[in-house]
Image 1: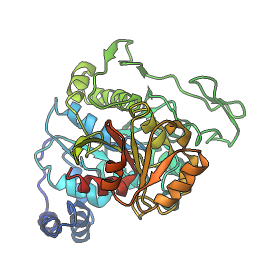
Image 2 (image 1 turned 60 degrees about the horizontal axis):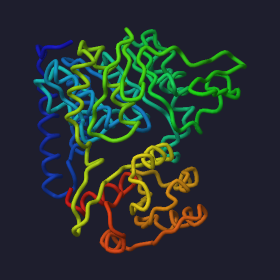
Image 3 (image 1 turned 180 degrees about the horizontal axis):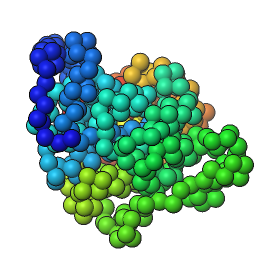
Image 4 (image 1 turned 90 degrees about the vertical axis):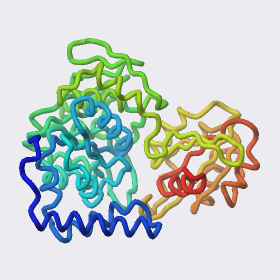
Length: 412
């Protein structure tokens, strides 16, 4: 697969050139990176462009509800030990954005691609991946993505008979159900903190038994497979039982799980765990996530949380009370317009934190916090929230478009 011996057709070259021109115009007009619109134009001109761009690459796809962007970045850093990498590092994870990313990687050996859960089957068909990493599935953008069992079924159908090595989280029953249709699976015990989407058996609909870290269905026998790789505190155990230290600049248990999965993926491409994990230490932030920025003389740490599982993980990262916390929620098309997920988040975990509420749907969030008996202030702007916050580093937690709004506001 590696080695760019098959040049693009004239039509493909025209499509790439046109896509780049449109993307540049979009950037010049201040409409973002232009990767999505550029990719759409390119695919209009050559519908087979994605497969043409991927044909010389060894491809790994990364899909999940949470952790896709970070894991993609960690894998990309690990694989750079073995050759040049092209990746959609900023998270444009549908076919158009992926096409734009690959158009800039003609000299790459590896393609490390984050893929939206709904588009995994399509992108896998077009890119012939060597490896697919599946991290988790939980409720997210219900008005767009539908329910998780349906996504798992779509993944399962797409992976049936796949030649790719599937690196999958054995602690998520939905991921296991999806990956089990593949003949080549490497199981990673990466953990699952959010379990509320996995109490019914995806195989038969029975009630899942979940003693400790194990899970199984008494009715049909569907159960947690034995892992090949295991996240064990600050180490990952490889298939030979060797323990490798995980040292990251990214915070939290979830990122250690992402690193464990990334090490398993890197091994598929021949990169040893020690080399892969050492390279992952270089990652300090991912598309602005975890960045600490100065704003109005205060330190703000920017944290992205898009759905109940993500908010739960993020609450475990923040400084303890009385650290001030700003919460911002939008409900634009990229977020999902249904905000009912707010009621699935346990906001009592924020007790003791001074809370400041922003965003298009700040009143929805305020009602939720009121019911959770939290003390909060609704603010009209980031400036107002920062001015009213007591001393200390301010933790800023926002969903997708609210996070992008805040990054622009602080100049990040």
